Length: 583
Figure 1 (tube, rainbow, N blue to C red):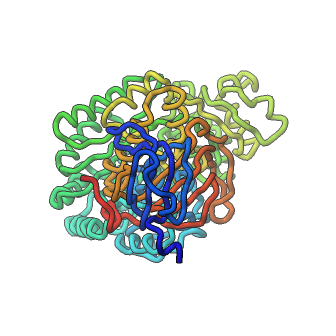
Figure 2 (figure 1 turned 180 degrees about the horizontal axis):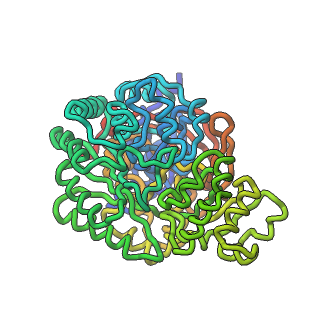
Figure 3 (figure 1 turned 90 degrees about the vertical axis):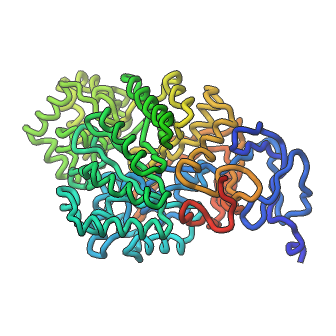
């Protein structure tokens, strides 16, 4: 047959190739794909179209390495969505899961529902939704990886070893939050860590947010997660495992009440493990620019000491839209947390309680600014469900108080209660000032992105960050050249997060390739999709301009339409067999 005589599976002809190395300027050329790998790259018209089974005409389009998203929470979604949207819609072809210490392995059968419940508040996915979508066929971490390997995947997935389920597996949920492990428990946890790393896990992850103002990713009942309260000594015991193996990565989300102590511990952890440290996260706060500058000094000083510390950076606007029926990022403020725990009826009852409401007013009067949203006074009423409330749309909460002739906190709660907490509030971005953001972007060790994909589904859409970067930071602002942008979107995060066989367009590497129309790439408006199990909803955001998104040589999206192909691989130890690794 003719196909059997073809030298290549596909040839991409005439595109503007930006190879992701940032050391080679863009050029017009051809790329040949064979057996999921890049077989040949030439400048100009160097590959005969007749040598391939399929030819993709990329004339006038950019041809770039598939993007690498090193911070996602798709651990549950992977069980019902092989394409891990929204990230894959924006050209992400490889992702790391198991971040912040969150995950579902290991897990005793009797702990499954409790682990899912612990993710309900922080990821804004109802327990019923997870129960409908997660067909548990694993207990141990190696069994979890085996389960992922068996499942169809549209994209490539690498898994860190999350510490929360590991600690719960050995100590139980409540004990893991409230006490140190016994000698035997510690030995068992370290054994499980070794087992998980042997199976293909890549280092370990945790969040350490304490129980104060910055603790915004809590358990379903408002209490901290196990890793939030774990001691420095316990963290360092796990670091010794990586030190002994001479391999691994640590992803750390640390933001307690003492920033200096946090950064000092980050340095100590990198020294103790001898491994790369992914610090999560740095972003601009226009009200307090010293915050990101202190983070940048930290990573620069760590590098000067010879420590491989990477700073993960939020590079897309923090324009959250949320409703009080499902929002958890006020959790660092006790007064707000108290009235936003429970189902809708429970929350409404709490919001009507005189003492609890007085505490919210007091918090407002003190000018307290929730960790993620900024001052409550500056929140904007984005949309309402009742026609009589339309007059308030576009007002800030401060203006709402004047319009309703009551305390602004009362006005906000009363408006929400009148709509059974379905009023949508909008956070005006305060992390996107061009000059301040450029300070982060130009640092040699900051990795743009931080999608949190799969998490915070009812108020965040950070999975759009590659499109946001190309459209705004490159095309409109000129903060990056295309060569620098595609290094930062692919090769840099691939190296930082341990993806060893992809991230650049080079012969012998995995054929993870994005082909897009640079001039016409544009984010679409955010919308609601009822595409979670049980017809549950989430916010989604797509982009125009992506022509082909290719994973291991197979297109998974063509002009925004899913092809149904599932060529993605589980990347044990950060790579797939038979593919060239980074030198």
